[in-house]
Length: 620
Image (tube, rainbow, N blue to C red; front, side, top):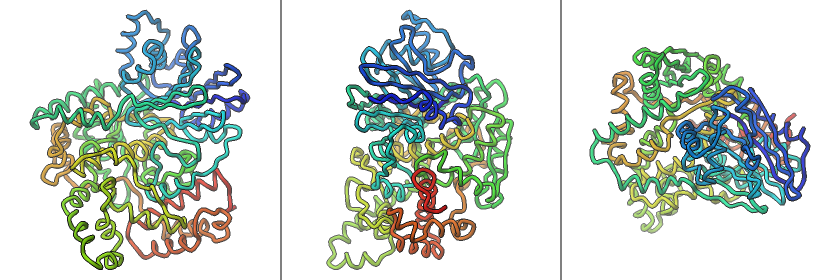
């Protein structure tokens, strides 16, 4: 696991500046670092990498890495789990190997197959390849978006990096905020690919590769989740037992592949279905006792530590837990802008940091259950989507009744959103209109194009299936996986997700929706598989989540901080937020328990922390 960055430009930056860009990601790779530079056709090229050694801990894994003929250069972040199989195939074709690392395999694979090699990789990865002969840079991101990759292109400058910090450190980078994105962030708590907070700066879309040549960009899919969903449905499983057997076989293989490392490996065990199944599978295929880790809270209503401990005992892991209070969590807030270097306000990032910190004392690689909810229908939103589709006729009827529009305006925001959910392109993005209204007040503008445009591609009659696929394209990579990546890499630790093995994802599309959402039971078939390893009595309870008490904090310990960032003179100088609207939101949040207001105010606070660190400090 690593951090990568680089550039191509008509202006050559100093080696020292390239090192400085690279070192902003020291936490992503404290074990080694390297840079490579060249001039080609009057343009400068520079690649850099910070390395966290996972496979082949020797110097043979040093990056950037060059091919034997010096024609191909790679800087790479991630793990290719089938690298041994690919290595044998490439050796049969005559490629010699000096190391035991997957980087050299990816380098040879590109030499042999070009960009077609990406479809052969099973793993999580982000890489940049400079092809001297073709005079082009190729960027690639893994299928599900486990590993982050940004790029900036303006004029003759092309810059890429695992995080925004190296791009911000590139000489002349303007740090011009894309103001439309502020509204997106306030509504969604993150920015989905291809967007970023800055103008001319983008995230790679999962499953794509980018070719930069002759100062032009071309992007292609090598794996399209929408098309794979369609293909999977054609070969759907016909019965539950067959589906369970195939799921179990593939999951055990995916877990076994993710236990391969030359450093200690363990699991995050939250006490829920997903992490329990991954931990049980890891123990099943491991020759020794797996180490598992969980966080406990002193408040009973959000504490799952006792359940985690009972599950660990049942599975037989070597378990470790840490109880935390508000003080420990609040102390980490000031770290958020540095490690999440664009605005990001999923508050569960804080306890995720703490479990990563604890686990990093014993392991370097952790397996998690990320992806289980999106693949198998686990979120409360999927209940709402199901109900909304059944009740959609009410909105249609309301639109036909004279005078109904004025009456609807007086309804609570959530009811208004459901009744006005008439656009066929965005049927599953329930309640987003409520957030758009509030964001519009805060910014003093019409917040258009906030909704995820990807839903237009999802022509499914079943809204629930549409929403699940939409979440796999947006929420999963850009919130869930981004949260875990940044939280774990803060402590130089790698996180792997067996459910997101692309083979398992494709297999999940063969499972009928009725086996995922079965008689109002979410994740039905995944639960049936988990019960083979963990007694149902230890798991059959309401989902608690992994959040923090935002409403309480915003009214108490963060009250003065919020007021400071909401000061009228500073807001007027900043010219982003409407002071009166911010004051209104604070006043409403102090009285209302609706999560919408706490979420929006927390996002405002996180944005201001970010702005203070990276743009300008109006609050010294």
